Length: 313
Image (cartoon, rainbow, N blue to C red; front, side, top):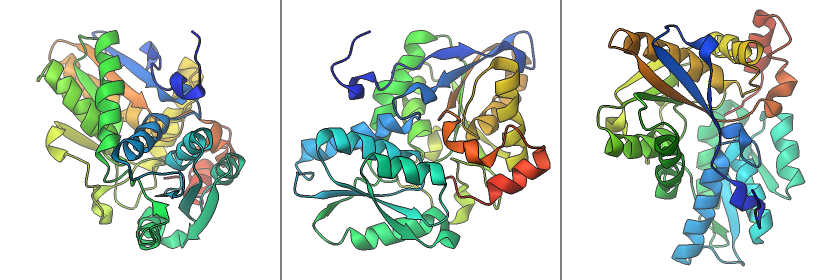
C-alpha cells in the first residue's frame, strides 16, 4: 500500500484471531488491533474526524488554537494531526499523567497545561472548559462531539462488517463512549441480533483507558441504549489478561486490552451455550506507552501497585 500522507494510513487495522484465549471450541475470539494506527491507538481515527469536522463547520481556522482535555491517547493523536494540518495544539492534562504521554505530546509540538492530578480527567475537562471561553481556542471536545461517534460508525464498524460479516458480539472498553456507540450502531444496522458489550471498571478501580460511569460524569455522546450488557472489571484482571495476550498470542497491547479480553471471554461463554460464533473485541492501543509501569515484567502485586501510581486515562 502507498499513501500520500500518514493520515491516510489511519484505519483498516488488522482483525486477528486469538484461539488460545477462547473458553470454548465453538466460539472464536478476534481482536481489532488499533495499536497499528500511526500513533499507536484508536484515537487517531477520532482525532482526524474531530479536526475535519471543525474545518468543515468553519469553526476551526488557522488563527485559533486547538484545545482538548486529555491525559491519554487522544491528546497524542490530536497533536500529530494538528502538526500535519498546521494548527497549534494545547493539551490540558492531569499533573500525574505518564511520562510517555508527556514526552510524545512535546515531541509533536503540543503545549501542555496541567490540571490537579487528584481530580483526574474530570478536573482536566473543567479546566479546559474554563479556558475555552477565550475565543482564541477551538475545543473539539471528544466527549461531546458527534464526530467521535461518526469516526467509528464510518470506519471501525464498517471494517468489522467487511472482514467478519457473521460477527455475533462486539466488546470494547467504556471510555468516551464513542467506540461503543459508533460501532454498535453500525453493527446493529447490519444485524440487530449482534450483542454490544461494554467493559467497565468497577468504581474506584483504575483500569487504564477506561472510565466508570459511576464516577459522576457520563459523556454526552454515549448512547447507553446501544448496549446489550456491560461487565465490571478490576485492575488486576486487566493486567493479568494483558500479560496473557503477550505470552499466549504475542500481542503487545495496552493495559485496557486485558479488561476487554476478560469481558470477551465472559461473552464467549454465554455465546457458546447458544450455539457458538464469533466475538470481536477492540484493543484500543499498543503497549509501548505503558512500558514504565513494568506491568509485563514485575510480579502482579507489584505491577498493580505501580500502575495505580500513574493516571493513564
